[in-house]
Length: 149
Image (cartoon, rainbow, N blue to C red; front, side):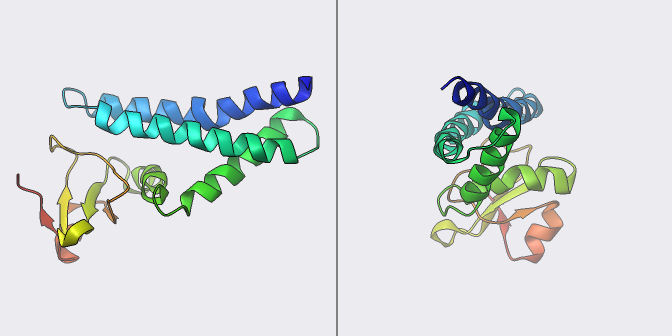
């Protein structure tokens, strides 16, 4: 039981602690705009991934505890990245790294074919969002238009 508790603390650090630093960085980048609509879904997502990771952690039986937790964290995030309703939110951080900053967030939900840029007031990521683009030019080339409401 002691090793599971120690491994679950490592899992919390890998699944909640480290990614929360990335959410904090995005909140700082969105300074002055509503950030709760962006941060709260991610914190809920991290907790769900942690619960899945706990299940995986209980199935794994090897040492050291930090490595077992790391394997469970990677597996839990791999599962979450292909889950239909949260896959988009899981891919957002990859696009932040790929683009070297906050990407353009597009959505095709309800045939809206629109996008938001990081400077927009309602910029964020939801499960209904679709592709990410590094520039507005890429979004327009894919037949998306700027969300003007």
